[in-house]
Image 1 (tube, helix red, strand yellow):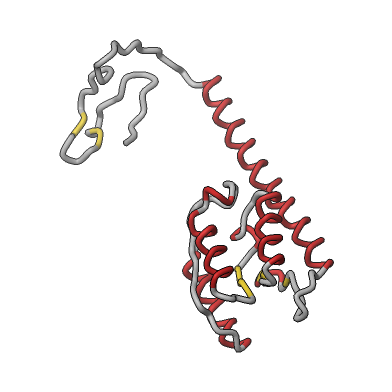
Image 2 (cartoon, rainbow, N blue to C red):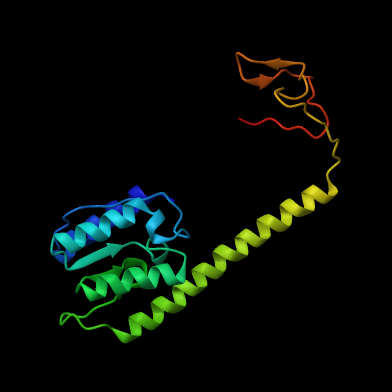
Length: 178
């Protein structure tokens, strides 16, 4: 994901709306993780609570998370501190000007996060299915590697270029990786 583009567009939108941007938080960690395992999200939550921030902007729902429970925990924490979450791509805001929960936005967020979580799980299942199928259909040769050794000798490996020389082959069932 190109979060730099998203950040820039949110800053431009904030300027257009007359909102002051105090700080930006950008995170590459998967939104499917628990909140406690997302350092930038935790830093943002701590920052907005301590600095009287009244609005958090994000480009899309998945930037807050892909786990429905974790997203709802984040939004509840923000709502409890009278901090509205604005989701740009859906034009959804969690609180109104009186710091009251917008019921329609809460409903939409629950649907969107559930769909996002379902999409994440579907992708995982497809990848696992493809991997399992590859394992079943691949022509495997099992090699026992004695403890303390590095495995079979690969001929034709160019250490300087970290590549297999043209015309060379790896032992059956072995792949090149770092």
